[in-house]
Length: 216
Ligand SMILES: *[C@@H]1O[C@H](CO)[C@@H](O)[C@H](O)[C@H]1NC(C)=O
Ligand SMILES: *[C@@H]1O[C@H](CO)[C@@H](O)[C@H](O)[C@H]1NC(C)=O
Ligand SMILES: *[C@@H]1O[C@H](CO)[C@@H](O)[C@H](O)[C@H]1NC(C)=O
Image 1 (cartoon, rainbow, N blue to C red):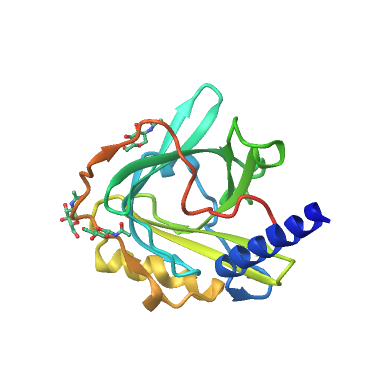
Image 2 (spheres, rainbow, N blue to C red; image 1 turned 90 degrees about the vertical axis):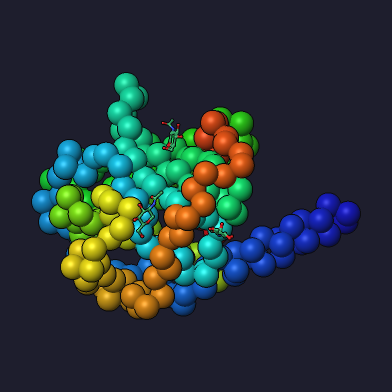
């Protein structure tokens, strides 16, 4: 009985956090056309997160960058940022590269947490390239769907090779957002004023852009 009550409480806690995270009705957008002939080799290197959109409205970091890293075990994505203006943190996810050229922009990222319980150890999320010209801008999005409440979550990165995304690039970068029903006025500009926080953490942490650990 005791256990059952606890289970129910845990279930409602989960449901509560799930409904705060998944806010958009229905499934993830379908038939989204991604960048054609995507060349990962040209995407390599460092990108600044000039703007972002998080459908749950949360904004917990500034000064975000994304950088690809080559290791003998594969290509990784280093998502670095300043959390709450105080902590410099980064997350490392392994890029899962599609075998076929046509689906080349349909990347996934896998995060591995050695110390987590078994079903939370590996977490894989989409990281789909909507558009990029490699030299100036890239628009990437992820989407997660919750069958439990029939809602989804979307996060969009408007990436720039330079700290400032020029207007022409921004125009091109926001074009595909209509396909995933994201209104460009909802994009949030990343603040880069205080990018030298008090605390530096040099071990990898949980990614903030993919928050929900398991599909629910
Ligand atoms: C990830 O990027 C941050 C910021 O550039 C850096 O401090 C950190 O060392 C990088 N992590 C790895 C594993 O390269
Ligand atoms: C972003 O940085 C500003 C200072 O530049 C800080 O006041 C604000 O709290 C930061 N926002 C977040 C979400 O860290
Ligand atoms: C912050 O962004 C501005 C443009 O908005 C840019 O000129 C400046 O170099 C950036 N600073 C850093 C530390 O990235």
